[in-house]
Image (cartoon, rainbow, N blue to C red; front, side, top):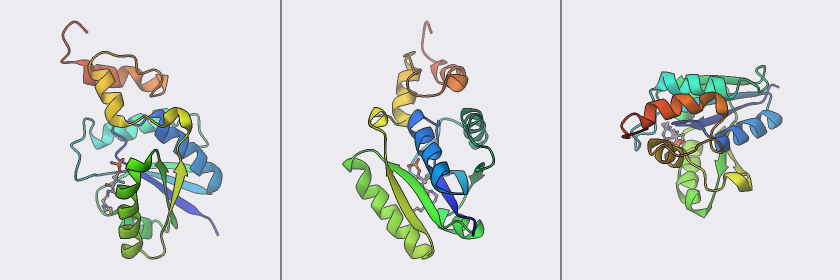
Length: 167
Ligand code: PNS
C-alpha cells in the first residue's frame, strides 16, 4: 500500500527548517503532500498562491515524484481523510513548540482516528529558525541567505523590505 503523509503548515514563507523536514519526510513515505493551510491565529504576509509558488521553487531540486504542493482552506484532519493520508509529519524545534503541537496532534487524532502525527526533531542548525524570524530580518534589510534558499531570497526581500527607508 502506498504510504501518504502530509507536511502541513502556514509556510509564510517556507524556510530551511521546513525544507529539512520535507526532505526527511520524503525519505520515509511514498507520497508527501505539502499542504499550505490557514492558521486562524496568524495574519499571513504572503497570499496562499505566493506561498505555494515559493514552495514550488524551493523544492524544485527534490524528488518531484514523491512531493505534491497544495493549498487547502479547511480542517487538516478532513483533508487527510480526503487524500487517504495516514500521517502528519511536523518538525519540533524546542520544548516551547511541544504544548501547541501536542494539542493539535490530539485534536487531529480525535477528528480522524486513522491519522498519526509523526514529530521529527529539527536539525540543530535550524533550532532557532521560524518564518517570523525570517520576516523580521528581511523587513529590516538583513541577510536571510542562511534561512531560505537562494532562489526565493529576492521575492521575500522585495515584498517585505518595501517599507524600509534606504533599502
Ligand atoms: O506553520 P503553522 O502556522 O504552525 O501551521 C499550523 C497549521 C496551519 C498546520 C494549523 O493551524 C492547521 O492545521 N490549520 C488547518 C485548520 C485545522 O485543521 N485546525 C485544527 C488543528 S488542531
